[in-house]
Image (cartoon, rainbow, N blue to C red; front, side, top):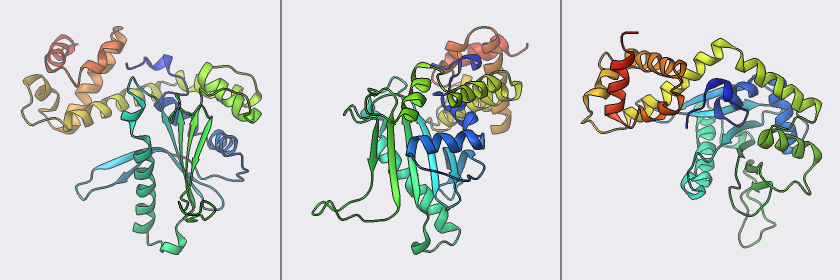
Length: 283
């Protein structure tokens, strides 16, 4: 279900990305999660696009940044969205994201020996592996000798914010309490909540959110079969740019009219899309 903009919290992808655009907040969140000290952090790149095909297809990373030691961090907020955990393919997604990071570094002329140390981080609103742990850290090791590491400097970390709080470092517990239950109990979680509130009252961010919904819908539409019904064609008839603007306007009008919960039907129900375009088209 697509949320109204004013209902977004930090565990929603859009809000997570916007909060983490704040350099200091992003740095502190990474310090808490990885229990390490980060002196400086590059300006976080929200929804960094990495091209993966010659035709210009690309994949977006939620947050992509680098510290003073050139260690790369890719941080992703992961909600279940009604899907079974196994259908999220988190393990393979983490592998894919790591390959995207490495391929981009190689395109810039980096030698194998100079590949950056990197972390792919998933903040999950569920237990990704069903073991009850709050953190699952994966590095490549030898099966025949588990003390022998491949030492390829790549680490994948999955956090389960719903885990039992016993045994957690205090800062992680407080952060998870905020993310899962919106409990503001520390100066830092107060900072996070203030940033969330500031974003909620920002009209430019509201429009960005609507554009994000439109972009996601457009991706779904692109992936459908060629035999599209007239309702879809209306939204795309004048080309990609015009189609996106038409969809954006429709989404905004539906949201303003209290039909937010119906918005996800647009990319999957051709008849419904046509009806809504006719209903709101002349307003």
